[in-house]
Each structure stands twice: as structure tokens, then as C-alpha cells.
Image (cartoon, rainbow, N blue to C red; front, side, top):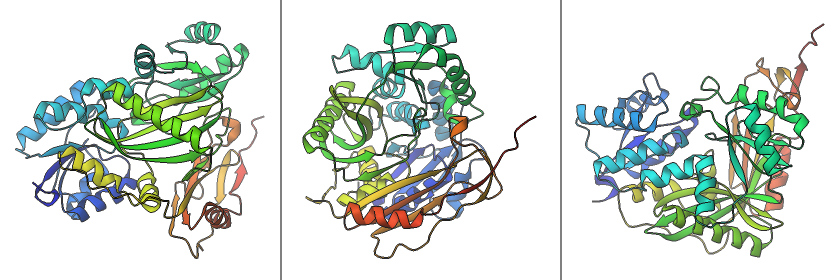
Length: 424
């Protein structure tokens, strides 16, 4: 079997920006069959020639129930599948179950579940003897107080299931707990984001100092064939919203290598022996520590960043793993360029009047501006803890200094927000 001969079931298409992922799959010649919930934008992929078929299956957030629905739909429509893949965090547990039920390659549902739940991930890490921050499940304000009394400050409140740091807040005192708890509870709802259909428990864990990184791995039969590291910029504390990153990192090579080694060790210990993983961690004053383990390719433009810097196609790497085809990796021995990825947030709460972004990126190896808000939209600023993301700018150039300069030219002028009227 080759990629061109194969039919792969893609469970969960994600947000509309992932359309470029399906463009790549179509370019590889694979017959993609997409399964998602009724009314999802991805149904248009068939008419656009980017998918061979689309099937509907309800999504409840319960992985067992949703996998059963996917399997029923696949069998009803007699959909052939040589592999099962997902590039969407919400669907990793469902895809693992579907692959196992069909006898197709993939990491075990138990391993995927242990990584996806941030509470379970901490528990399993401690059981395996990995360096693990203290953490406790939190279901009420009383439990938050009890956890804080044991863990101490500073600490981080975060949802058990989530992505993009939604609902993640640093806390520094008992006095701040009621306010933070209400704020996070207001975010961690299915109405806010579908990812919270999987559950809305929280956890409190030790705050990790140091510099954060994204570690992208390609695993094959327990061996790490490739790793890429992106260095995250400081978050907008007390919220832990991302502000940007650059690849490759310019941090201590020894410290970064230690984090990569711990990431690989963690993947193996969890039984995540194959496919593309996106592991977030920190180089702290006490050594490397894992923040979270994602059993799928990194989101946003991570795959384009990795390809620009290292010449490795993570989309194809995951596809080939799901089809049990030999890896086809030829990473560059040295970075081919440097890429920065900057996130623009609303500077204040009110109405977005203007989002001045430059369009010139002369000399850039990679240039992309993703606007995520509309003029006239009501936006939240830092005063509301979780500021509204307005745009994301990704620029690649010959070195980090050049990439930063080009990015700065694009985001030189700040967004214009008319402040919300103060209630009398």
C-alpha cells in the first residue's frame, strides 16, 4: 500500500483554519473520509475536492459514546478505512477508540486518555516516577481552598480538558481564589468551547518558573525519529494566554536537550509509541518539567513552522503512521530559517474600531496573517483576565533577528478599541 492507494478516516476536522491541512492531504493523494458532527463546516470539503467523503456522527464529549457513533456511521455507509487519524485535540480519544475497534494502527485508548486528562496526566506521571508538579482535582471552591492549602503559592488553576490556555490562571494568595474560581468557571463551559463537553473539572497545580517550550516529536515503534523545539514567549500573567513563540529556540542548548529527553521519556512511559506528539514543557530552576502531553500534531501553523525550519512535514508523518507506512523523514541538519509567531490580543475591553496590520514582508521565507476578530466586534481586554485574540502573525526569515524585525513591522501599530462605557 502507498499513500495514494490509501483511504484514511479523519475523525474531527476542527476549526475552519484547518482547511489547509486537508489541502495538504489532498496534495498527497490520499482519499480522506472526514467524520464530524451534523452541520459542521467540513462537509464542504467534498464539494471542494479536498475529501473523498464526509459522514455525520453526533458529538457529546463522551469518548466511548462518540466512538460508537463514528463506528456505526462508518459501518452503515460501508466506508473503507486503511487508517484512522486526527489532527484535532477534541477528537484524540475518539480516534484512538475507532482505530482500536477497526484493528488499525494507533496509540492505545488508555495511553491517549491518560495524556489528554490533565489531572490523569499528573497522576500517571507521578506513578511512573517522572518529575511531576503537585496537582489536585478541583470540583468546588472549597476543594480549591483545600488544594491551595496543600500545594501552596504560586499555583495555577486550569481545566482538566482544554487547549490554548483557555481558563488557565496563576494564583498567588487565598484572597484571590473566589474571584479566579468564578472567572474560570465562566470559561470552562461547553457553550464557550466544545472541548469542555469532555468535562469541566479543574485542577490546581504548582506554578512552574522558567521558559516554556513546545516539543514536537515523531515517534515510530517507541523510537523518536525527529524532534523540533519552539520557544514560547512570556505569557500574559496572571492569565497564561500565549503571546507568541519562535523556532528554533535561542535558549541554553543543554537545558533544551534535557527537556526534549524528558519529553521522549514521558511519551514512552505513557505508551505513546507512534505518531506525531505535541508536548509542552518548561526549563525550570529545578530542571525540565512537562506542562502537558498532546497526542496529536500541534495546532495553528506549527506544522508550517516545522516544515519551514526543518523540512519535515508533520501532516504526512501522522498520515503515514496511521497507515503503518514507513516514515519518510529527511530533516535538515541545521535550521533552514527562523520563524516567529506573534499573537495580537485586544488591549482593552470595548468595541474593536481598527486592527492596523502591515502587509509588507519583503524577504520573508514564510508570511501569514490570520485575522481572528471583526471590526465592530465587542472584545475583552486584560482587565477581564482573558483578552480576546485578534490576529496571529507568522513570519520566517534567514535568522531570528530578521524574522522579529519583519514581524514588528506588521504589528507596529496597536489595535484601536473604544472602551466600554462604565456603568453608573
